[in-house]
Amino acid sequence: MHEKIIKVCHGRSCSERFSPYILSRLSGDKEFYKYPDTLIFEKCLCQGRCKEWPIVIYDNDLHIYQNPIKASEILRKKVNEWKNTRK
Ligand code: FES
Image 1 (tube, protein in one colour):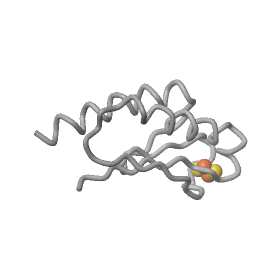
Image 2: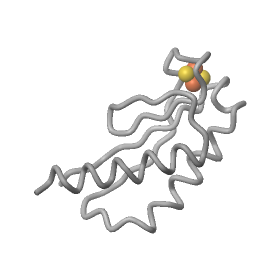
Image 3: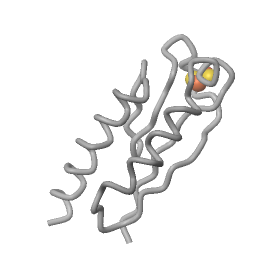
């Protein structure tokens, strides 16, 4: 199985910049993807990039200055990439 883990920082700085809303948005978006493997959404601890909040890690690819809309768009692109690399 090819699981993809999406981690959203829930450290103090990121949480103050709405990272819980990002996690909620991404978890909701999951329903729209026909990703054949598993997408797992997790909270993670501070990544040491607090000045670049909020942080989202898409299967080991760390992105800074996220917001729910930006994160949703990146996840859509990532899912397409992951689908193509499975072929
Ligand atoms: S709180 Fe998210 S990187 Fe530090």
